[in-house]
Length: 296
Image (cartoon, rainbow, N blue to C red):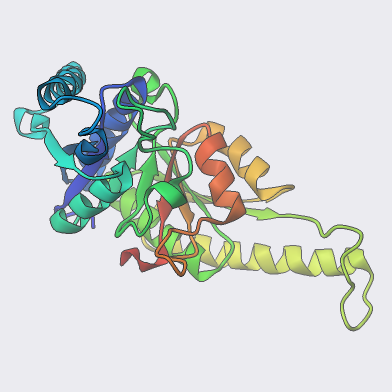
């Protein structure tokens, strides 16, 4: 949802350094998406009711809320966007998901892994477990984003021609077009290991590798041409090596890297796959994971 449409950017906050990174990324995305910001602090009141008095727990929650407000003031958020929503839920993921569904969010933004002063694991890290069933794309801010944030110029989209990659490319293309960003399409060819069973025609392994590389190059070229027809400034690159490592290296030159996911598993969890799971932890830029069922 970009351009003339407006929506809500949900950001999970708790007053930590990771929270500041998430807020900074949320401010950036809200501007690019022409959306309004909704900071959400999720606290698990129930699990602590037996260990802390009600007054002590409320004091702790208030202290954390105050620290979040201080971060929002430091980021010069508009007054309307400094309205912190405090949500009670047994987990941060459940609270953020419920809020995103009720507000029809266009993206959920979280920071890196950490534990809050309440002892809870909060947004970040293993996104597929934390944001199980996310109804929209999920953005992860890298450590230090609040300190190093710059106006975005380059958005990358990992592309292999699959349905998951198409969903990610659609989101990245809409963002690049509405925010006048430069789009980079990145495909990675990973050579077949020597133990790979050769093709039925018993082609040499090198020939099979060349065929796979050529097909990936063809898909990349088609996607690049389609994006360029839409008026975008776009470049494509076919990288070699381990996909997670190659994309992580390429992320140094990006402001945002958009990835696809495999959709939802049998228990509603976002299934990122090994490449996406690695990249949300190792990428040098902010990462957006787009579930197939996010409706983009």
